[in-house]
Length: 137
Image (cartoon, rainbow, N blue to C red; front, side):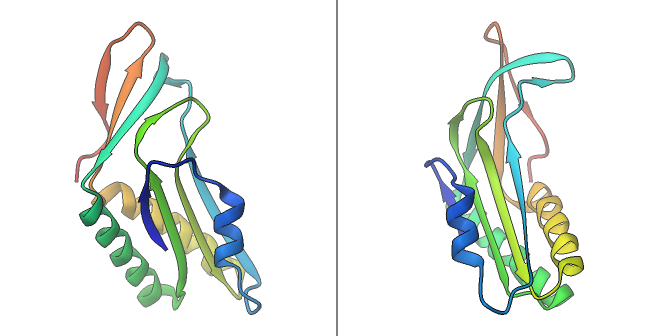
């Protein structure tokens, strides 16, 4: 499952979807909206994307994980639109028979998402100032 959504991300639903009887480990990473960046108070974040390309790139990352670790069970959901403090912006799940590979693959996945997936983040500061932050693939 590789999906861009405007809906609230629910970790338990992704966990249930990815878990199979042969798995001994499911590792998830949830990127959440924090209340500050570099000492500035954040009011909210707004994410934009080219959804079709973003989902294609996430599928490619899943393929890289399969090639590197032999793991087929990978899922990524990225939320777009206006997100409030504490909301999940991205959820990645990796499931496999053993934990070591799942931890490594999940860490790899978020690093690759930041590098190649066309999702752009606008920081809305307390007081109304805005700034596009992060890498723009």
